[in-house]
Length: 122
Image (cartoon, rainbow, N blue to C red; front, side, top):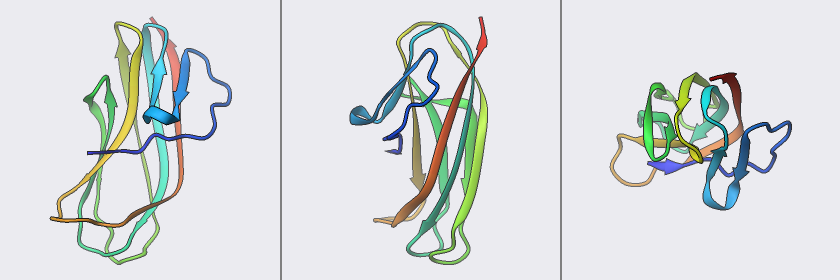
């Protein structure tokens, strides 16, 4: 999977540190967190099915993912995914990864992306 987490902004952070150089966000306090991801993307050719996942310490979170298949090339596609994660040890690295089912390269162009990680409690 390709990591997509190089965020240029880290506003209003509590218990999280963005690390664009290493394509991750690091959570620094144990507990439950709600992770929401909103994005808009397009592809250079149609036909590929994309699988998107939130990863926690290098493993796909069981309950946070989406599948999308744009029907036409260069068709902007909004996507949202979210769910709860439990952080039992810190630091805990969070990132967003995308795969596709087509052999070879597929141009995937992100227009906008916003990840919100909200601390719920212990």
